[in-house]
Image (cartoon, rainbow, N blue to C red; front, top):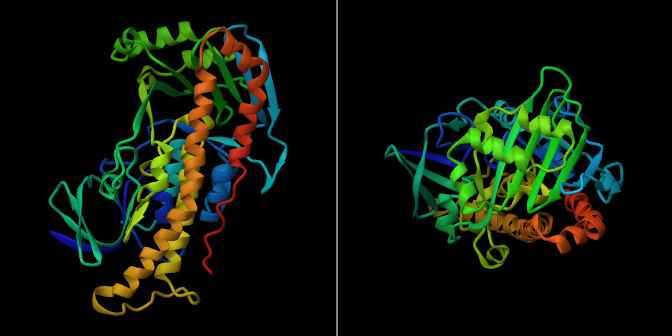
Amino acid sequence: MEAEADVVIVGAGISGLATSLGLHRLGIRSLVLESSDSLRTTGFALTIWTNAWKALDALGLADSLRQQHVTLDGNVTSSRITGLQTFEMSFKAKGKHGDHEIRCMKRNLLLEGLANELPSGTIRFSSKVVSVDESGCFKLVHLADGTILKAKVLVGCDGVNSVVAKWLGFKQPAFTGRSAIRGCATFKSSHGVDPKVNLHFGNGIRSGAIPCDDTNVYWFITWIPSSQEKELEENPAQLKQYMLSKLGKIPDNVKAVVENTELDAFISSPLRYRHPWELLWGNISKGNACVAGDALHPMTPDIGQGGCCALEDSVVLARCLGEALLKNSGGERKDKVGEEGKEEYERIEMGLNKYANERRWRSFDLISTSRVVGFLQESNGKFMNFLRDKFLSPILAGLLLKKSDFDCGKLSIS
């Protein structure tokens, strides 16, 4: 079976749904292909920094999500070895693009919020893309069920194992040697955790606890597992007890967050990233195809910018595609001109090149910064512990605000 669609987006994650919503706001219909049979909420929650709130404002979704999540006041870092606070920073400072705004958002609420704003039939579940081909000015998207979709524009938002990124020539993301466990604990009454980004470092382990609201707290642990620790990954109960024993000197209310988390959260995931130099000479776009989100810039979670950067991508990509597919005034589709719409194809290609140029250095910067911050935060040894606790904590904490002080712009097209 063969069908035709103007814009096909592969993947109904954050970047896929946000790109589709951005296009919808501009009057452009898209089809989102999702391999799962429902929205995926892996990861439990994510920190939404100032830059991502600006993107959500541009998409017209921010206000409803603000009402469901508590504002975070600042960042507190502590030593897991001594139990002492090493640095505290307020988020009240004004940035180049206005006041900072940081909240920890439940992933399912973000995905559902994006999906609910889309027209019925936009998301097609159980649609696994197996390969991509070309036919004139169109991309042929082959699905596992034998369906072939003929697309004027193909956007890969299909994560770290992206089929579209592979077609564009990107290598598989590299393994860092580090792993992460993430969870969200729900309390019957107030959890008592301060509305801050609470981080704990030392002994080669990085952990954190961040409230989403009055009763839910997101937490994470990242570390470099030994071969013996990797064996624990198959037994969530043992992994939970082992992680609790490794938490070190952290506040009792933060330890209670991990203790109150269901066993199904105790799944260890390897951390992967794209070598940043690949973005400098790789094809973020080629012809009428491009990538966004984790398909473009998989990064370690150390500055909390993976999902935020994906939201930025979506606004920029929708704006650039809007400029290519719509008239400069009136908001109506331009007529197809020339054999197989070559003029439209050239406009799309120019639009995607513009998107790629806007996102290349921003993605390079965030991947590189995340990698360096993670290395410094998770490094072990007396010298590194001393250096981090006494001198580097203010610098590392400052980078969280600095990298979020960014505005991807509005959706409106010129």
